Length: 344
Image 1 (cartoon, rainbow, N blue to C red):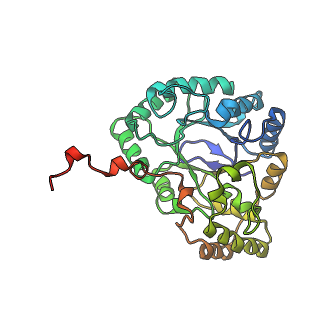
Image 2 (tube, one colour; image 1 turned 135 degrees about the vertical axis):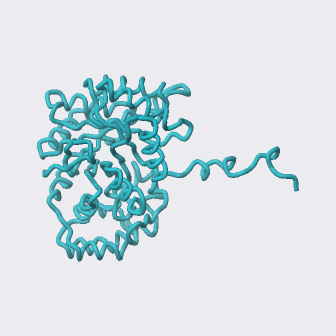
Image 3 (cartoon, rainbow, N blue to C red; image 1 turned 180 degrees about the vertical axis):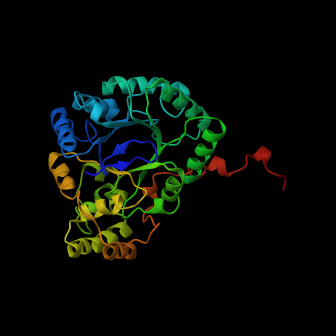
């Protein structure tokens, strides 16, 4: 695979990356098979492996660590911190505080079997922690050599701008990458985040490029697989506008002579701001299918048709943005308390 620049980090990455959320209890519990999948991806030219401390309660990091023995120096290893692991206990075992970050990074290094992480990402925005506190802790990790670059995941544009401003004015390291949800059916990032990353020279990693699996063509109107993830997030797989779009995209892919999966991946990596898109296979067969489309390039005629089906900047299901401002979740943040309201 022809390598791309990861923003202005100087790190070069493959246009496809391997996401490992499905390795371990959350997906494929067979460590041996998961390791073989990782090795197959590396042999195919993928050099970026992305995981997180929360995936399967740390099991995914352990699998990745086993798989990278003897190959670590050739791999760009990315992991994340911030989300609470199901096995974590106590009020200070998640988030973006210095207290948690300096503990969590040691746990990740141990599970991964390495003494440095190439890209350490804040998994989600922590509204309860000052971003300066988070950046200060990450800056110290960079200076110590335990981390080589820092990034974010699923941060809204306003918070990315704030973080860049604070880093500049407080002489702290700045976020160099953003990992975001982006696909043909979830194009909201085109409105603000993707232009912003280009402006600040940030690399972009894309997760869910297949729209949680809808863009494989397996989920159709009148034919919905059951069990697993569908049972947990049924609303995402039965959303009417997304299913309507899939029914229009399938014949477009056929006309273009490619599978819907390959068209969806090519669409994402074709955006000039995107450094790499994460593949999330659970089985070897899924990986083989995804790798088979690595050379797919879409012409302007196909891209124009996609724009007609899902206009630029449109996310058909707002839940696919995976971020709600705290004030939308907590009514107390939108209402004055009785003692602060003006007398009628």
